[in-house]
Length: 266
Image 1 (cartoon, one colour):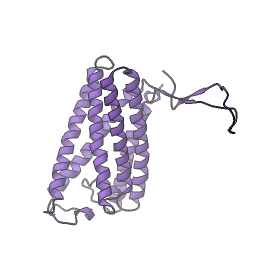
Image 2 (tube, rainbow, N blue to C red):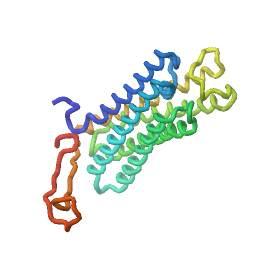
Image 3 (cartoon, rainbow, N blue to C red):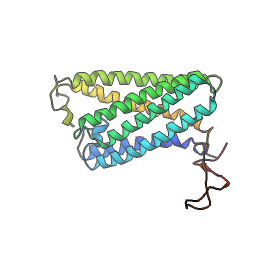
Image 4 (cartoon, rainbow, N blue to C red):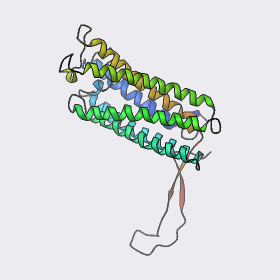
């Protein structure tokens, strides 16, 4: 049996692979059509102009669905492992909410280009990166609370390093983008897709875009740490019938049917 066939480990794998493919395909298309410069454009700039914006939007919407599924499975796993730990239960619920908000932001970013609806696009980016960073922090706290009883210390330290990586990238991106868009470097930066080294604010732009890509990679790395955990879990769906027909009749006892959801049991 291959590693991705164990439990639900294919979920985080599919999430990272699919999202990476969305970035790569839209980047290649945008660069090939000369819509953006090859040197580290904003991720969303590679999905601003047709036809790549169509591909970018569709693929990121699917990525958001995969992300919600991954976050939900992680929530159920932590809950099952710690059914009576109140502080872990509260943190776990907070992580679920933060994760879903981050996925909502990803869908908003995919569907509202910055050159069309800048306010909506920025709101989506704040949800994606802001709530996503908090989600990673909460999950790292949960990893700390659960070691060494549930898993080893190595998982916690790896996730902590990824959170620090994410935090440094987020701070760099927020600081440099705030200075860049302060108005001292021009007023048409929102519509600007091509940058030259001689342009005013070019260095700040490059730092911001580098930090954005770096932050995305930290997200990818964090979700990849779920693979080993997800090898130990499967979910079931249960159908409860309240009658032998779909007419409005009095309910009668029916045997419940349980089927596997996406995976075999372990």
